[in-house]
Image (cartoon, rainbow, N blue to C red; front, side):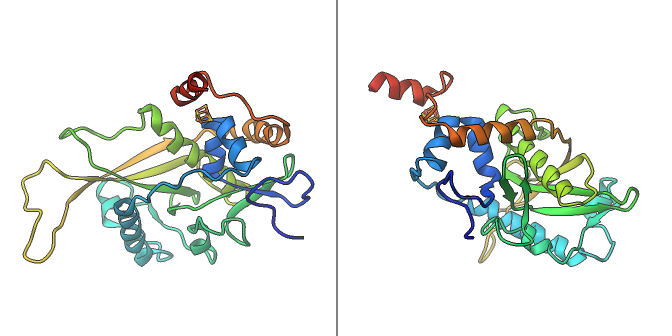
Amino acid sequence: MSRHRGQFKPDHDQPYELSRSRVENFIRCPACFYMQQVEGIQFPSIPGFNINEATDILLKRDFDELRGTGKSHQFLEEIGYGHLSPFAHEHFELWTQSLHFGAENRMNMVHEPTNLKISGGLDDVWVNAKTGLLHIVDYKSTSQKSPDKAITLDDRWKAAYKRQMDLYVWVMRQKGFDVSSEGYFLYCDGDRFSEYHFLGKDSAAMRFKMQLIPYEVNTAWIEPTLMKIKECLHIKDRPNHSPECEYGQFLLAAA
Ligand code: SF4
């Protein structure tokens, strides 16, 4: 039987593949989710964040040099996290690939009560030499607009980052790994305040301040949300625009 992905087909008996970003779409707006998954409406594409992608690649390259050696990185040692080192696994590279996420050995699992196959693409996994547990790691890039201000996870919109971490921990646990409830966000903060020359003779180099932010995951919301997603996939009519959504209220008024 073919894989069940893209537009939802109620009669398809294979697990329906949903990326973590589609789960996030549902949390943000069930109406948008329904239009995309059930009605098959293509949403406008958004351009990629290429500089963020570049910092992800460079960080992973550095950690890959140490992967499986049991050695930590000097940055982690310097901040008192020398007990963490990059985790090696035969499927690690597949876990980092968010495309073709439904395929074999990717970062995915089938949630039997809903027949949903939930998946995503990890940035990194570190192993803790003290506990033996794994930690899920997410690389983030930003450039703060105030000097000497620590990055926090308090902004409202960062709830999506937290949910991403929650979901990845949950998926990896379902796959049978011993994953700590402490995840880490490794932030690169493009430094626009320190005194240094950006432009050199034939290239430019931005400095990044680095910050590791521990986060205690909460997986309690995941299964109830998957049950709601299943319900939403089977309803006959599109859910209403959310009253909290300015665009929704605009569209209603315009109509
Ligand atoms: S306009 Fe707002 S409420 Fe309506 S579908 Fe889009 S995000 Fe949801």
